[in-house]
Length: 236
Image 1: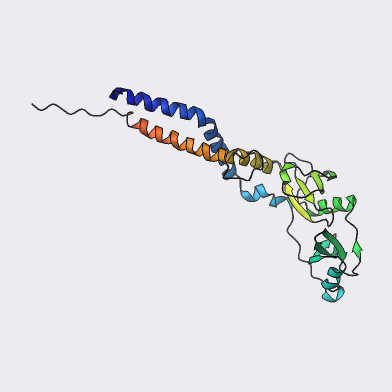
Image 2: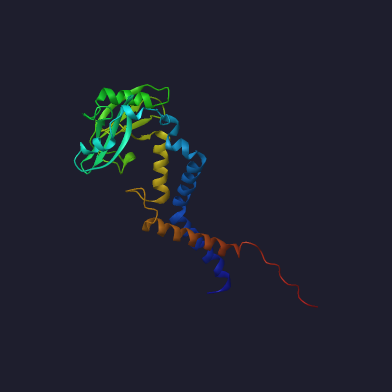
């Protein structure tokens, strides 16, 4: 290959590599800008829920947690929990999580829809009104990894805040909103995992990274021919 052909090869190599990976490189830039421009605390939705309240309670007014544990077969752990101002114990076992009245030791039924509405209004700190509450049996992608069923409480407003509650105990499981949903979409495109959205070592991403590296090296190669070289003057 003649010397004059190398600049052409460098340009064509860079051009075709850019054609292959250019759109994904643009996606990386746009998604990265979004994910860094908005505070992660806002994305988490911390502004939509109040902090957990520390409520002092006289130990003498509560039953021994061990008694609550014995009331549930295969109990593994017990923790104090407030349900609409009422002290309860959440007892976890292989069968799930159940409520026990911390004052009497009696088993409590799961929260009703009306109680979930009260819990949603209690935890939500925004000014938007509660739009709907429903018990869902299929977990949407925005709360993947959670187990169904879940209570879903949707609020009005452009950001469409959503609170999710555990049906057996009324615990606040997580919160979602539109800015989080956009973040989740950009995260999916950024790591190129279009299924589970959590594998940052998937083959597609690795292949794209190698293509991007090759495009960058081809661009550096092309720079060698981008600037005219000074010719040496002939000696007299």
